[in-house]
Image (cartoon, rainbow, N blue to C red):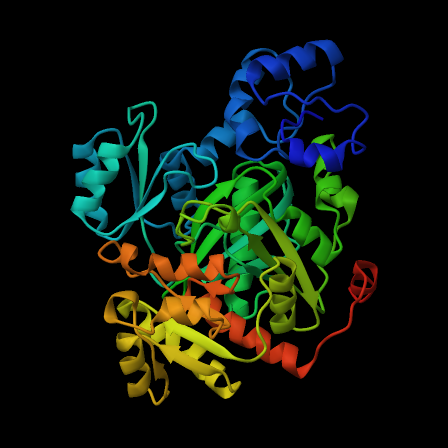
Length: 477
């Protein structure tokens, strides 16, 4: 095993016969390859970095086991990937690739705003942004490093208010097996690594789950994937769109393996070494419990950073909560992140105008649970129009006592605050930073607020028992 991450070296030193603590560069991998003279190398378990150097390694005579470098390049090349989606008749958001500002403006005009813009071949959604108008696009291109014909930027249609889902699959090139579909808690626009997700899905209709499974199989076979693959989907206006396909293990593979009781990495490795899915005799089994993945963020280490979630990944790890119902699994996942949820007290709700309507469900649930609700002027007026009474609290520029005073005095046990967009992000980032400073749980999406209220309700109703993973998996028949 070649691993340049000191944090994981401490946990995987006995996973392999030899562990090389070297950078993942072509030169270093080739040096190890020449010394060890292996049958070949597996690049699917290392995220994006090994995929980026796969073609160079192969050109240097290294045998790549499993999915070919041709497939890797096809999945990364938006234009070629789109052609295959059209061939399979699978819906795909409108997109284009631009090497200059003029090209970007033409593509944006064809697709229409809002857009999601990013460099090609990126890691963790780095430099990815939701662009709402031409001025923002011009700023993005001006700031973009290395925009060129070799390194174009990718411009995609942004599906607003879409539910995001993803599927991990094991494929042998002729068939594919999908152990589970995961539903994201946050709506599309938050990086999949930062979004909480639930296995099995709780609000996606069965017809869409079946569509996702079918599309995943079709794409894996079309791209001739041998080993693991992760595909991201968005469900908007009762239609399933494919967002992207990654011909590698994703960070959710260990979670799916634990929740479903299927050792995906082991099976994928057997396929890379020549077995077929038929040899493995894998069967899809209903999962009678729920697993919730939650991201762990480092914001307490960076007091000046605004902890808002977006297309650029900001989490540094993840945890898993398991229980008999999705609400309790969510609550347990929050406990595991060390940001435990309150079961009573006061919740502050202050959200941007575009989020007022979607905040109503969460506010109603907190009200039903007996929480005292404080809200800022605009949010309070909207919630009052929907029949939810709240107490007015002042923003920092409106006088005292204000939100900062209430947070510092521990009068608030939970903060729900969504950013107000580019006009006033600076205006309310102090709320989120204050919550972190005073160790008060905070939520920056209305979908997350609703899931939180459901989790607190589930925990109050049934504390749940501690069960080992083996006990959970014994129930999977």
